Image 1: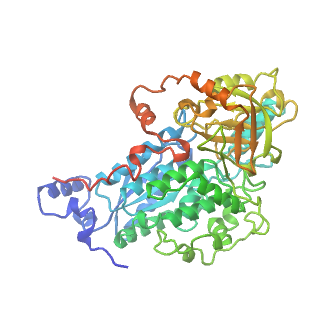
Image 2: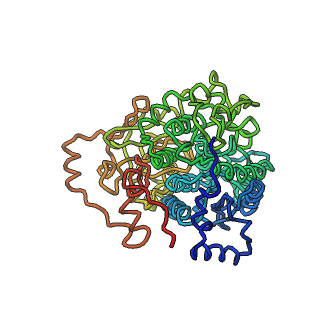
Image 3: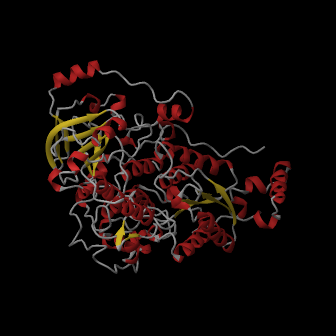
Amino acid sequence: MTRKDASDLRSARWFAPDDLRSFGHRSRMMQLGYSEEDFRNRPVIGILNTWSELNTCHSHFRERAQDVKRGVLQAGGFAVEMPSLSVDESFTKPTSMLYRNMLAMETEEMIRSHPLDGVVLMGGCDKTTPGLVMGALSAGVPMIYLPAGPMLRGNYAGKILGSGSDAWKYWDERRAGNISDAEWLGIQGGIARSAGVCMTMGTASTMTAIADAMGLTLPGASSIPAVDANHQRMSADCGRRIVEMVWEDLTPGKVVTGAACRNAAIVAMATGCSTNAVVHLIAMARRAGVKLTLDDLDALGRVTPLIANVRPSGKDYLMEDFYYAGGLRALMKQIGDRLDLTALTVTGRTMGENLEGAQVWNEDVIRPLTNPVHAEGSLAVLRGNLCPDGAVIKPAACDPKYHVHEGPALVFDSYPEMKKAVDDESLDITPDHVMVLRNAGPLGGPGFPEWGMLPIPKALIRQGHRDMLRISDARMSGTSYGACVLHVAPESFIGGPLALLRTGDTVRLDLPARRLDMLVDEDELARRRAAWQAPEPRFERGWGWMFSRHVTQADQGCDFDFLQTDFGRKASEPDIF
């Protein structure tokens, strides 16, 4: 592989010329306490760190940044840490999805406007992986992704707890009166007990696995628990490797190809991925110029078995168990004949070379193809007169009796309206009803919040029911489960068919046929459409105003229209005068 000369480094435009502008740049570096030998003729590596004191998933990142710096220095590079927007899922309201594209824009512009030859992207919490990767893909400099890693498994009263998934389960039991205050407090303190992302196969672990399968991480990096010493070593390895990637000019466009995106989608299905994978994977692929569609994902889901027995789609294990069973490399080895093993990765080697020697150590956690958790993949895409542009469901995480279901709709126009109804024990509802929440999509939410796992009404919980068919244009936490149809597109807020549905209308789901329909005749729908009035805009200024005018719908990845690769020419290198 041809290696760059130091004069070809991107940072040389800032530091190398013998003129007044470079004098100023070098002078300011010396103001920071560096001598010229620290940074001249060396790859300058930006460490984009999404740490914050409110991002529990990334609470170890201050220390990991130091590990990365150690590796960069050992490899002869010069590391600079740069704080990035920290879009945590726990505290950012109404949803961190409202700010994913902000992180992507910030990442792209930070890279382009600074003397960076390569970047290490530090993320993990749900939206940080796609946001960082999307921005870095558009910027185009060599990059490597450092995943935060899952937290340790939860524990209370001798029971293993899974973040998110068990919170939903025990909350229903508390609403039913089966959990005491003391027990609830114990669960609250035991369900999340270390740094790291959710230890279920939620959105965070889904997205880091996707980055891994795309070839953007060191092999298997996504599986390492956050507080395992291997995570520190991996972080230093990232620092060493990014320096070599700069010399090799191994840019993300050479890694994120159609083959890499297809590999990522197949691996996502095999892991029991979050439904959020659909939105983010489409957006990431399209930033690389790969036109991935919902239909592509559904086709892969039909033929890819789910082999990771990890909650919530699996029954027994969590991410710590997955790592000890061999991790993502072992899972990819199991399905190797379905992957394009010639795809290039950030190691400079092919995916096939990276998987050499991978082994499954527990075949109940990472199942063989002859004994999958579920015969088909994690996700299915629906079409019909309720969702002409698509909707998503997670078949393996819901009661099979709802795979074909017909029942009367119970429609709510807002989350507070729905919440009030489900807490009313006198609510007139049966298990055959179809609960519907609308005005919760990208524009309606606003920001596409995770409201899609609608709570089971108390009236049904008291009767022992724990699942029912639910439909919304919202998203759902990747740690959630149940018969939930999500991402209905186009969303109701812009006049999609969901806006025309009324309480009492019959709704039919036929999962094998991939259909979702309201059984209302066309003449009646035409009358309702003519009478529909658009809601008031959610925003009149600021980021929300910008978001509202440029975000695409769920089936298009919810990226901004002006950030698509086909919108205009890529920005050139900045002028330096």
